[in-house]
Length: 134
Image (cartoon, rainbow, N blue to C red; front, side):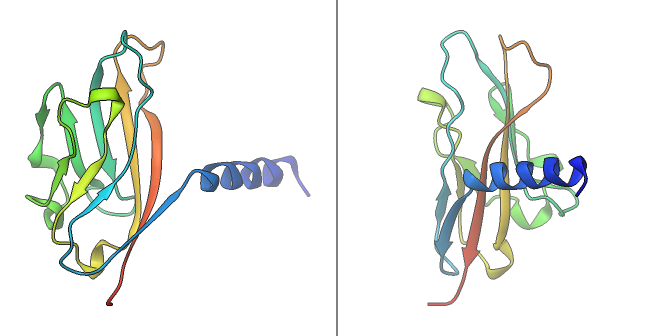
């Protein structure tokens, strides 16, 4: 097999090892846990929770102290928040209220921190939310 195949296989295995699975029932509120690396010199500039495949992908967008509700998928407006807007100890967990069956899927948390050598967002967490009837 080609080197490309093995590289992709390693990436898929590596990224799925850290994936969390959260289960919920319709109508419940859930928290998708996530922690950014905690470094006193690195201030969190943006937190983006996305669902790949949606258009737009964002379910929560936080930038420099404020939530930005304008570029969210409409089905998530007024249903998402950060567990701790001060992000103490790097807590960037997503709170999703009144979950629906359609919320089932993969959620990714990306963070951009000041003081890092990167201008790119870091993928911090991947969580699969499974919403099912009791």
